Amino acid sequence: MSIDHDVIHFLDDENDTVAARELVWRLMVIDDEPDVHRATTFALSGVKILGRPLEFLHAYSAVDAVEQLTREKDVAVILLDVVMESEDAGLELVKTVRQRLKLTELRIILRTGQPGYAPEIETIHDFDINDYKTKSELTRTKLYATVTAALRSYEQIRKLDQLAFYDRLSELPNRNKFIDLCEDRLRVAPSQEDVIAILDIDDFSEINDALGHQQGDRLLQAIADRLKFNLGAEVILARIGGDTFGLMGTAIQLDPTQILGLFRDAIVVKDDSMIVTATMGLTNQLGSAILARDALKDANIALKRAKKTRRGGFVMFSAEMGADIRERVGLLQNLRQAVESERLFIVYQPQVHLASGKLVGMEALIRWRNEDGTFVPPDRFIPLAEASGMIVPIGDWVLRMACYELVRIQALGYPGLRMSVNVSQVQFRHPEFLGKLNAALQDTGIKSKFLELEITESVAMEEADFMLKTLRMVRKMGISIAIDDFGTGYSSLSQLRQLPIDRLKIDRTFVSELSQDVIGGHIASMVIELGRNLNLTVIAEGIEEEKQAQTLLKLGCHEGQGYLYARPLTAIQLREWLQSRPSGQ
Ligand code: C2E
Ligand code: MG
Ligand code: MG
Image (cartoon, rainbow, N blue to C red; front, side, top):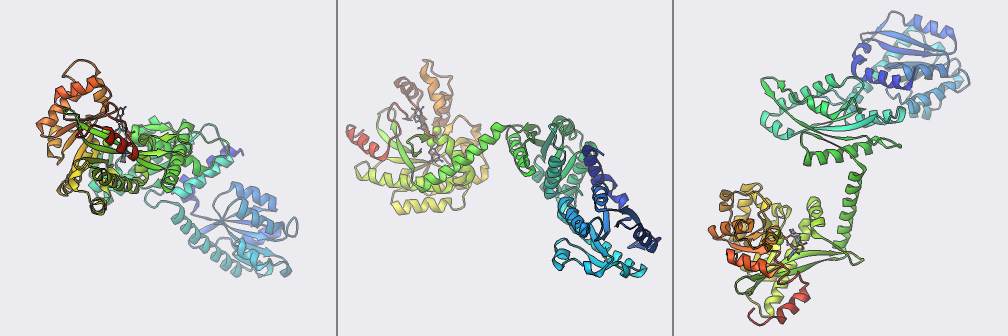
């Protein structure tokens, strides 16, 4: 029998024939004396144990037994002669059965002709041997009792395994079992053709909430059945999470377009008929001794990518994705160290009144300098800090440092300047955010009207109710609010009208368009008009040329910020810059 066939046979068993097989108990007699075989079958002939008849298999040597046990499935009990080819052939076989063949459910009854060959207690314990008997003890009644006890324990172990390795709802293998099955297949029959995939039901938690959990369960069951039915027995299929399925098979069997196509028809579950979609992540990089667990991680990276960019579709894992993730993980570790060794600092970029050129405030911008003097741009590390939650302590620190800096600047004789601090969504959502804001004001003693928070347009529009509440509270404290990167999101006028805000910040991409002579027709001009209509101050960021400043001024923009006036400056540079300006500016 070829190895491939063996795997298929094994998978067949897992899915189809277990139920049929379990109607009998399979017992294997392993003994080099034909008489013992005859005596055993005779003693147990015609009996039913725990409601089922017995089926006998016969092996006449340890080698023979190993060969048969590799092939035959669902053998419940072996009656094993200790002394066969050699004095310890039986005990060696026990080791093979437990360690190499991994038949842990199988029950073992040892038999020996002479009492002197009893194994050590530790051996009985370590190899999970059920019983040890001399052959003379195995009369019909005793044999019956011994086998019954062994079968009872076999059944219990199977039930426990069922609980530990199978999902009760779908009756599919669970995550652990899936990893085991994939591991076996990778080891026994590695193939270039194979892929491992994860299939995730889109928006399942919403569906579950809408339908109720019972219907949700039925839906999952129906999906599992549909997959089972269509994928066939050669594919390893498992439920590896609430709404995720693990699959392993050949690239042809797991063609994602076909599998996702299985969701085209509505799924009918008790009175409800619904269309659900799924997203898949796959990996075909199963070569060079990869572990199933790692392959599953790769498939998961691909799945995450698909969820972001191709919902309802699929993404195949590539080495570049792994590198990308590893790089991000490395960066995050470095960021942690940077925080600890205080390699983060803040720069301040002045903001001016366009018509008069007077300084009105500054924006605090974070910087990260590596040990080798190079900088990591905030656009790269802020998203990471957000994803990992590190932005909360980092943002808190920026807020405090910026407030302290404002105190120092005010003390130098600039009482009316405002300090703008960027706040990310994660910070905003944090339950202690308002408390921390208050504490920063209290501890530094700055007046709230000199503090401004910048939130990006997309953040302001997300979860409108929650944002509205929080923004109102911030406003109530006397702190002003600017919408950053305005024009890049999709806010509607009615949404914008509701927000308690003070300032719109035109994104610098729209400012850079202003180098041409045309007035009007630009996004910048629309934003300015919008802001003025809503009685908001409008500030343009990224002004690099005088011409842009002039155009913005003509369009009615109030304030500006950019390299034309000043680059972001360190605290020391900022003080020098301030003192070099003519007074009153
Ligand atoms: P942002 O809030 O829109 O900041 C403006 C960005 O424009 C800054 O980039 C600034 O250096 C740059 N900039 C200013 N003037 C000019 C100009 O004339 N020309 C050009 N080409 N660029 C100009 P930076 O410092 O790289 O910051 C990038 C983004 O990182 C910021 O965009 C902000 O969203 C985020 N960020 C920076 N610091 C913090 C922080 O402390 N907390 C949070 N949550 N986000 C921050
Ligand atoms: Mg900003
Ligand atoms: Mg901006």
